[in-house]
Length: 92
Image (cartoon, rainbow, N blue to C red):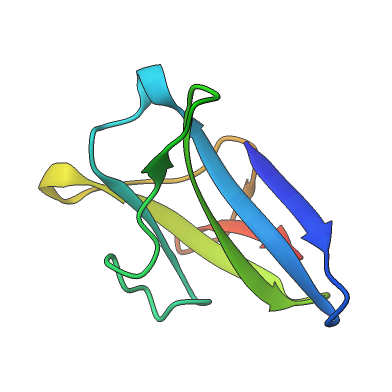
């Protein structure tokens, strides 16, 4: 589940969320917004039955990302388009 919310600073808060029951224990979102750093944005367990992380990016920016789970398993987001490199892509 992807959620976008405009902020007053001319940025967009993008929330990356995955269902808790379908998500590995440790998973992070990596992308061009964090230098593909797997430690920058781990998905945190929430009370609403998801794991999520949020980032702010400039409004109108195209964001490339992938999830990284334990064991080096990379996967995309079913709600996002995929580019030729296999990354998920959304417009903020």
